[in-house]
Length: 585
Image (cartoon, rainbow, N blue to C red; front, side, top):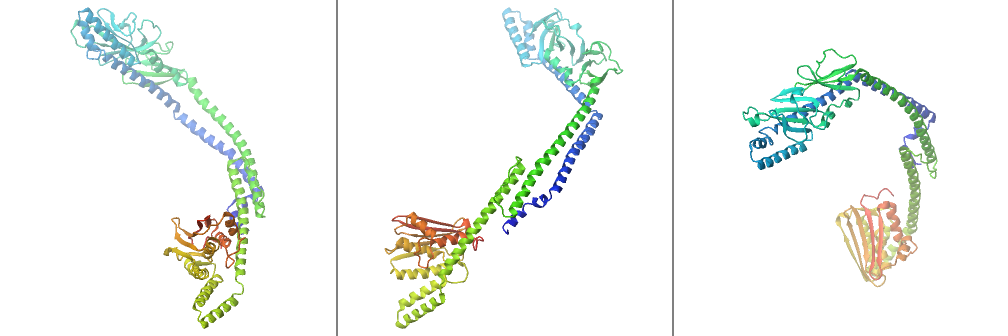
């Protein structure tokens, strides 16, 4: 349970879930809050909305629409002014007309007239807001050139809207297009050649109308969302145009008093025109009623939805939490086989999945700890078995060494001295971890013994970086590796063994022992790692190395054996350079 306690302490729900009755009370409180908060929010929204209405929100909206209509009218009149200037004597089209009026040759007149007509049509095509355009000869009372067919034209019958910079603006009035009797337009008339004394140009006027659809689009009262109509008032205070001729007929004086049925909103433009929109008082009041009914409907829906959501929250939140509580209770009694069921809610399913994963990991951790403890015990037993009566062995070896010296057997003396060092190192009780330098000194003594035994039939080359010599490593790590190359690689035929130890770029200690012997097949490699072959001189083989690496370094330690028949064997041990392992001792 020492392993489980830190993991269970991370789940702060356990204390809360221990009191289901308290949780129920909290959920009911949440249900009450979820029901009252929408009412408070809707009430605040209602107060804000009513306050906005009282601050003339609708009035500002109507005036904004009216301002857009006024802006469109001004743009339309400016466009008429610009288009008509193209027809003056200084304009792009008018300069050709002056020449055309003075030409006597019929062929030249037809050619230039056709060019003028084409330019008029081009101007009309490139400016879709312009409708009928023509030159009008006042002295003859006829249209000279136009882009459309013209009905009998009487400019004196048009209602003058305003006069600016020598141009007269008219309308709204019926179009002078021959086949139109109902379409309303605005128009402009200006002199072709102002101040001219020429008989050919002084009587020529320019007439330009707006497009039919443009007028309908600009003065469309449906854009206000309620019953309304527009009235245009000229600078003399007379009604130039009215969409309600029964109540305010065109040509009458605009009344100063308010109309009982309508509310007037007025805006003035830069052409000395006054644009007024009249809105039905009943429709105007309907906006207030609409807001009130909308608020009531939202309040009713919000309360209904909040109650439903509160009940759903109670069911969907309490049950998964109770499920998690039961799971924690099972884990607390070391029952890891039970898996919590998912509830279909992403948030709780995530917690449940993490809890199930935690249970699996705890179970795997316990099993791994049991395996590691078993491996550690086996290693300790193997070590204890190797430490059989060490004092008797030491005393016996010292006696043999003393006899060799007495007899003058120097070679036997040195052999016994090296063997005593190896035996003392292997049976020592100084701790499991030693420095790589100590391990190398013991390996050199072991090599000396084996070279005497094999009569120097093999060569051992050591390549160790000085900077890694103080690195802590487990005891007896190198000797079994070299021993394996001697017994299972070179045998009695001799050869070369290389020991290479270096630091890698990943801050790991790389130990490589390779030989050029006969090689080992995969079946024998598996037997060596499992410990089923016991030919090692001290009973400690590759199985011991493998277990030692795993016990001290866990998954970060690696033991890799590669071999090819007739070419040799390589044994590689990779250890993290973190001091004394990673806590697996």
